[in-house]
Length: 146
Image 1 (cartoon, rainbow, N blue to C red):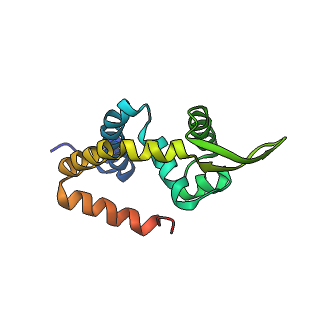
Image 2 (cartoon, rainbow, N blue to C red):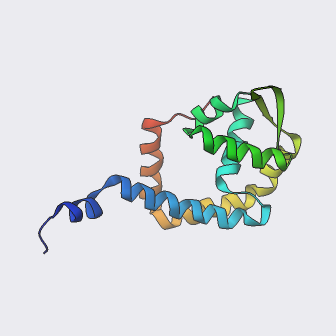
């Protein structure tokens, strides 16, 4: 067994590395499944969150999904260009409030079977215990909006 060096410790024991590998793998499964719908899992999640919390400022959407402002802005621009999100109010400084459009709701409904297939594939990859552990770990640091 090799001695535990600083680089070895980070590569072999870092939870951030493990979490990022899982996130990229699971995201990739979902993105592949959603490609036929011309949407990514990040965009679908944003649409779903907007559908749950209703009209809101982009900043609130970012807070709910724990996203940086630039990520929210970039994805909202793409979703608005596809008419999946509508601007409720804006001013000279930019968008003040956005809402899920009827086209956005239809996109969610159309993508749902493929999203479910990706969910099943991700659960199989992680195993029942891994999927449950991931949900439980996320629940301790993030709450789904009511």
